Length: 406
Image (cartoon, rainbow, N blue to C red; front, side, top):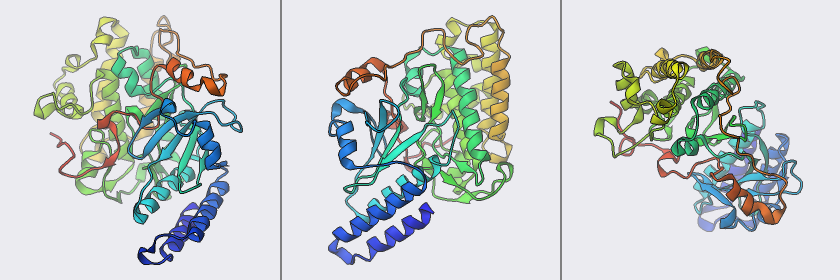
């Protein structure tokens, strides 16, 4: 339905006539058609005035992060059930073709997320298609991104393992949908954590449904590589064949981040080790995983921690196989991580809950509108659908910009 509406919308826009630009009628017709698409998906549609008021006219004090497709703000919408929401304002384009592409990204996200229901996926609460803007409203996940926590070094292993198991389950859920859904941009900055350090996989701008096939028999789809350097499936990058195993590869890189807390792409490392995947595959393959384990884990390590770290590293090694057919299915990855997590001794506090040893960081969502800025500062970490790290921004990759894999 949404795809058909988008086609009609683009067709009407092209009928506006050559270089004269879009008329007010065409913009109004596009807005009406797009609003119908959102409404048919059961997604509330907000006016530009409502969203602008919620973010204090998109004030910098409400800004949470900027990514490849736009900027995310925290806001408060009176009609929304949660007090605070995360509002992603898509980057505005001046070229009609680029604008059509931005609308397509938004419609794709609305169509996909509105059909999903899983505790490990961020919830879409609304959208805005007013005044030439494309805006998405999400649940506000108050504890920042996994990338931020790993960079800060304060996440215990049992919490990391819980995040891994629950994120894998969410991706397996996507792959099991009919038609299956490929996320296409799995990375630590797209994994948000709530107050109990439970993950929410976010940002479906690049996602796509790939046909009514069982996950185990997904045929590769030919498409130009898009994703994030360091996480991108090298076989997909080489032959443009996208499959569910591309998500498996990206998740394997996330497992490496959980083990090492290293940057996925770091040009300060030797040339052969710029990509974390290349570095880790070498060490794991040589049985030297201890060389790359995050020192914060080693300092507090017990026998169970180091044993489970090695099990997870072996699973990551399988996920990162160059040939997609050698990689395990995401359902197998999720089951293995759940088994590793549940094997934790009962004496390890929080081992079966995924929670860390420190008290969870919880935001008070009952603040008034004037308290939004203070609430964001209280969180202490960015809450966004795209993290602000430059190396993590999603972008079409080319042979010139994509680091080569060993």
